[in-house]
Length: 426
Image (tube, rainbow, N blue to C red; front, side, top):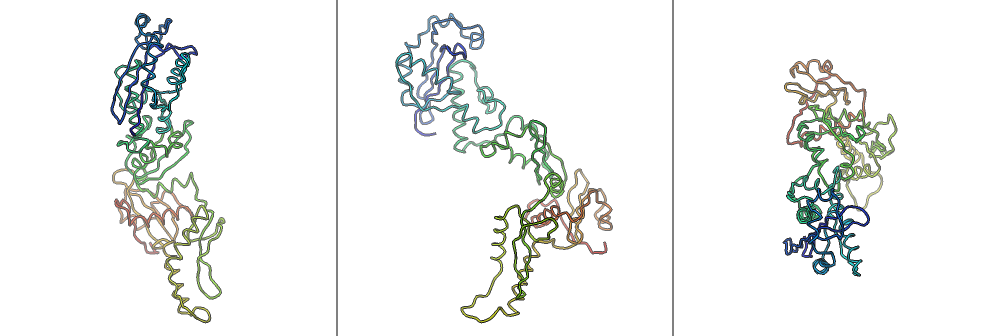
């Protein structure tokens, strides 16, 4: 918060109608984060107030008979407001009403304003209500004197401080929407698939995660960056798969893998092997696959940077046979990184419940399927196909996520899955 002077205001009025009048006003002035002045007074509206307003505020018509009129306090208000930034929860109500009252006295009140309601809507997307009560409950702000000007002004001051911290990204706590808190508490910290639903009950996003609870908390963290997502999520739940790779397979059922571009090998007339970017068509074999051309070009640049080429100041003719062989060997080494480490292997991981195992079988360089079992690892290795519950037939998406996962396994801190090679005859 800067050294500017802020005046936090709350007004109680005769209602929300066009000819509403002020019955109580409170101004809390702060500078450098400290309260330097507090002003509070009842205001005679020069008319009766409804029973509803009396019950809401506990201010009676009798209380207001002896109260000063607005023109009696106008100078005190002007001195406090002039040159300050006006802060309230819903400035469209408080500031506009003050402007109207000063205009009646021939004065034009012009101030910079800060509306805690509008800032809260921007900083905390997805809340079902942005009333002062709801925000105080969300941030655990105590308001002992609700619907009285000073009580609401002090609560707005605490809200103002928090919103400033959120805007400056120095708020120390992680925030989640109330409607998400309970579901987060019940979401397991295990590998699986998270289903996010909108207000119509339709699943609009699926997220495969190593730790569902951790990933959901990352996605549902209250921030402006998550605004669209938070506004859309009505509910969510998780499906435990034990293996995060099986969660990826399940996600492919809803979001099929349809690459637009691929990189494969091209053989030059000289016998040199080079990498080539091509539009991907159904059935086309590639080494690396991409959703867009920029991703393919970025990968191509990386691949070329890993191929060392001898440079000569002057030479005649094409590269020698030895140079071509060396070059091709480098290309082949890079090609290996786009394939499974072995054509036949099995990945073992955690199951969905205690004692259960998950298994993923790769045959001839393709994912054949996956399953769950309580059988011993020795029994599985003897006849792995017997334990498959879901089979694939050269599924490009399954192959790609499985290859990526095996590459990532060696870098994972918490390794729940392991893989081992299989002999062709097994």
